[in-house]
Image (cartoon, rainbow, N blue to C red; front, side):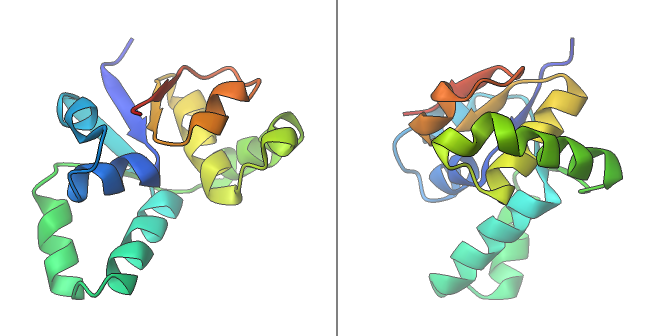
Length: 127
């Protein structure tokens, strides 16, 4: 099995802003993120006043593998809706979980509610 982990946007933002749990994310050797979750991160950084060039520079230093949101992941994320409805997981949340499921790797998140989801993915909460 790969040593890769998939980051939820909350985990990546914790790392960028050095919030609680950042140390857990920083220890990972191989990190990836779905393009959907990358969109969430970029949106949040822009809302917080960062310029696009600064965002690109920051993300480039993290050596992230960017995983395209493709048809296979889209179908899996759709399937996960019924399994995660009770927890209220968003499309972005399900895109992250679907990416991890298809790649067969764990996911890191700061959202504790994910631990209640009945999905076939190892979920590690950083807080």
